Image (cartoon, rainbow, N blue to C red; front, side, top):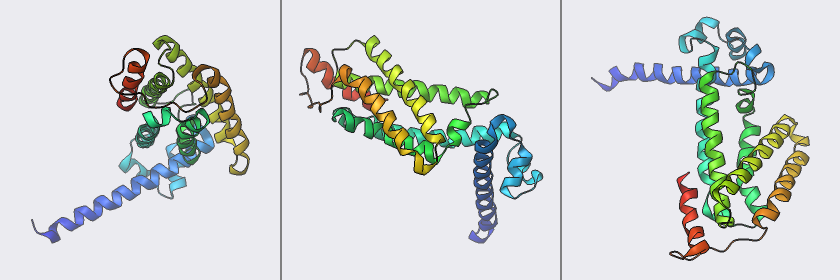
Length: 233
């Protein structure tokens, strides 16, 4: 097949990808404004400036749009996940650790408020809810691994409990912060971080944690092993 023969399909594919992006961006705005339950494919098509028939060329229903949109957002979230849950961040002073871990997620959710909007409705698509549950557990596991670096003497059950409590507090505060206008968000973010700091300080300390020598025994040895657990999440 000649290069000229290949060009039309590629152009059609590029146009299709742009149309999908256009529809997903419109859906994000509609879901944020009306909520998933009250949204409709007609409203999404109208927001995108296309006919409902054009929308149905790419998505059979509202659920398929939500699943695709959520999948793309989850992929971006997982990329951020890998950048923040590191042994280096775990050993920072507590205030810097909280900044390093929470700032990327706060930035992501304020830039993509539809991420939280999609999981609030009573009829959130099952696939979206399932993927969110998997992400939630993965994040809790990663926080648990961070705690192993800072306090290797804590039992797994203790670390898991603290991780669950910390993450639940973060989600509640994040939801409030995302709802605020940009010029009024900072006090909520500041209070969220302060709440986490006050909770965690007596449990994991506030100072930086020096890197433990590799191959150590006892608690130091367990701390040396913990970064691999963090990296594996």
